[in-house]
Image 1 (spheres, rainbow, N blue to C red):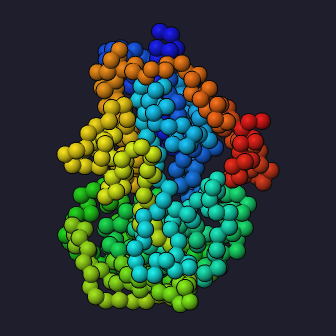
Image 2: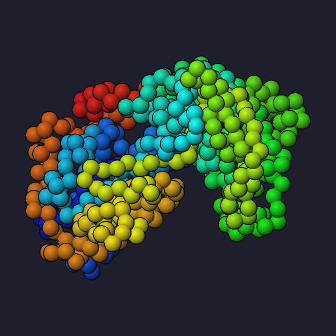
Image 3: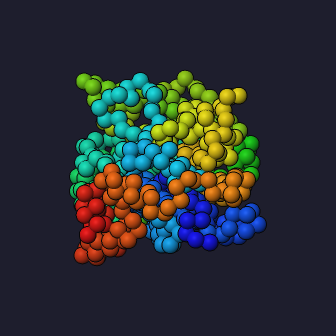
Amino acid sequence: MTETQELRIAVIGAGPAGVYSSDIFLRQLGKLGEELGLGTKARIDLFEKLPVPFGLVRYGVAPDHPSIKFIASALEKTLDNPDIHLYCDVEFGKDVTLDELLERYDAVLFATGAVEDKPLGLPGSDLDGVYGAAKFVEWYDGYPTGAREWPLDAEEVAVIGGGNVAMDVARELMRNADDLKAKTDIPDNVYEGIKANKAKTLHLFIRRGVAQAKFSVQELREMEKLPGVQLIINEDDFDLDDDTIEEAGKDKLTRQMVEELFAIREMAEDMEDDGDTDFEGNPADRKYYIHFNSAPVEVLGEDGKVVGIRVEKTETSADGKMSRTGEFEEYPVQAVYHAIGYKPASAPGIAYDDRRAHLANANGDGRITTEASGEGAQVRERLYATGWAKRGPVGLIGSTKSDALLIVTNMLEDLSKAAEGGRVAVDRDPESIDRLLASRGVKPIDFAGWKKVDAFERAEGAKEGREHKKVIDPEQMRALAHA
């Protein structure tokens, strides 16, 4: 089989979803290709709009997550594969169109992830001092086009959300800058910003009860070990009825989370009994309040700026249904961060399901459709979605892997039915895409280019006794990659 007879697949997005899908496609093709009449060889071209790969792992997860290094290392090993070709700094819809990809590739897989916040939608959400989690995460993760400075002058802050992103945001707002620098790859501007952070009191508001929160146990354990921070809970939130305890016990992860929250309750009691200390028994200079069954209803303002937040007490039944009580309380805060979900990115020329917040695809099987739903929705041949682009902003890395296997299975099935064993792209010259991009003045950053950026980041980190230190300027990344 010559190179031009290989299956040719384009993947849009070099985050976990795109990289896992590329790996699984090659593995499954190796196992099933002959049986399906496809052969066992494929070339996968992976297009990423940012100058560097890894998407959410590099730019969407808090820098103090110890698992990041492990995941990034695994993704890098996958990219170091002669059948996967990395094209960073190439933006779909701008540098290359859908028609141009379909001319050159037998199938196109969208793994475009999410970069925007769902809107808060409360009165006062347009006040100065209200921030979406996504933009804050971009700042502390050094996103190439993100903010370089962040206003951290509020002494009292609120975080809205009952998931892992809310926990990340709250933790970084309560972090000690020197502690964070010693253990992570944060760039200098983030270190200086967190060092100047004036936040002394933080309120985390979770609409539902202890048994319905969506935190991972790992997130909770990271919250427990914040130097100089006292955790404060409301005893009443932990008064669970028998039905709720029974329901929580049915799911292993939920049970583990609830058990960890009860451990936090005991820890909070000890912190108070010991004279307002942190987890190590040292005097705490910051207070972190965790409020369950608390639904913010309005951000309060004066002169266009945040001065407080109004919260309604809720009740949550064993089956997770929330009801409002009509009891309200107001808290003085000067900043509000909302982490109530992401809105996955749209893609030019692909229909979007606004209600479910993902690219339109047939019954969640990853096959792209002409419209979101209804009788008129037809499957568009050779187009697929995976990860958050397919299912919306839910699930962790494990869900992304299982997604990838499902979509790859569907892709192989469709390719096996297509003419000439799936080889339907008209232009089969593997260098055709390079000529097209060159004709537009687009200079992709390949895997070797990324390794140059990575080597520089490691060298800069080593100067400070750190494993890694992020480069954040896209022009510097390009200069390093093309050197």
